Length: 273
Image (cartoon, rainbow, N blue to C red; front, side, top):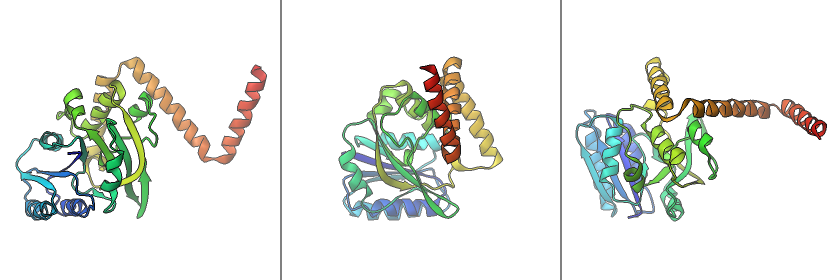
């Protein structure tokens, strides 16, 4: 089995329907599908059972269960442990695959690389925006630290979870960030970017919520993992590179400022010679 698609859900009935419909529509059926519902009470269970039967009838192995769990990452870990595929895609409730051919496009690209990442499409002001994450394959530690993690478009080898550990359930919204830092930052996991639009991202999810409570939680967990995973010297280096990167981006957005910078840089080079 090459691929396991895992969907977790709790009380997001319409989001779950959209996700499962997109999975059912795939022309390539060479995957298994696992749905982990956290004892929902909003009709999600009925939707899960209905679409599980439809997808199973297409010849796809389906494992769909509803039971109480300990939260978001507990459910994700449960889904990974149930999976039998070489690769795992976390397509959570509310997110959906971009079209009927996307899994068929991705399958040949799962070549043994530990993490293969495509693109996610978000909506901003009613317009679609393609988010490319890293946007290139030769990522470095600074790239990983800046956190362009797109789990809706990341196909991870299942054995990474055995080697580096499952999602840390003590986090509420940043356990996937910690996982990628451990595998791609400190670890030796290989990475490949592919310019394929994989999924639409439901921006109503926890990590995208902009209210005060979730902003506070995001900051708390950010402070925690940055302290636990980074030495003060390494963190200072990352912050310095981040400042330079932001300055570069600002200059590049203004043609006149960028042209002046390039003229000054050439002048400095000549003077140093």
